[in-house]
Image 1 (cartoon, helix red, strand yellow):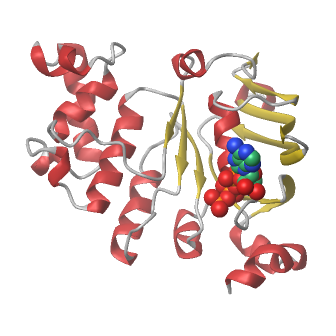
Image 2 (cartoon, protein in one colour; image 1 turned 60 degrees about the horizontal axis):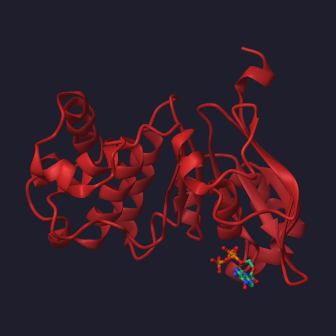
Image 3 (cartoon, rainbow, N blue to C red; image 1 turned 180 degrees about the horizontal axis):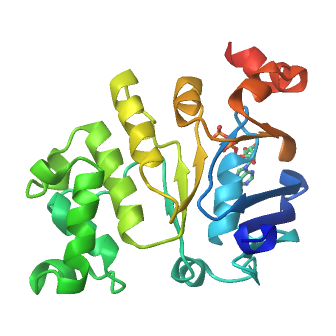
Length: 250
Ligand SMILES: Nc1ncnc2c1ncn2[C@@H]1O[C@H](COP(=O)(O)OP(=O)(O)OP(=O)(O)O)[C@@H](O)[C@H]1O
């Protein structure tokens, strides 16, 4: 496959302007099909704004977001989701009264009205996706308990599963290890690494041990701008990165 055919997402010179303050400042990055990428940067670097812009929640004042060759930067959020991008927020969005399986069923359906998922049963076409996802996120044994009874880490895994069950090709995971201990963090890294080549994943996280476990290329942002890109070792060794981020975190 050529480099162009491999390209899934291109963020091209994107600026997001909040009354003169540039949360993103001519920021560019690309992501290939099947690639996992971690985006790091100090507080306020623009990481969440990047996700907001890709998913269509925030409109760039300049630049473009190209997904599968199409400029999506002026599309409304539902149209972008419909094209195959799904975002997991930092706080889990699991519906507490629905079972784990029903939460996945809701995510897998194109018709997102929850009563359609729980009232008339799960369509046969979705069942296989749901059972496979339950196995992948390690919640098969917990499938019938209400989502609200899951532990914090399990809720995060369920929500990663929900993002997967949508069938989206690009998953945006905003701090998937928020509030997790080391064992849960390791499990989350395994889960993301097990997603396979059919998905591309953009992960935002502050936890450097998690970033190391992922072993994925890292893009560093600072003040809305692209700073560096490389392996975690290269990024760690970079004096500019140390100055703006790792130096403070160490
Ligand atoms: N709606 C808004 N109006 C004005 N400024 C905003 C708005 N949203 C974000 N900002 C500012 O834009 C900058 C980038 O914010 P963003 O949340 O994208 O950073 P971040 O890298 O995700 O930070 P953190 O790691 O703390 O979550 C911050 O200075 C923030 O205060």
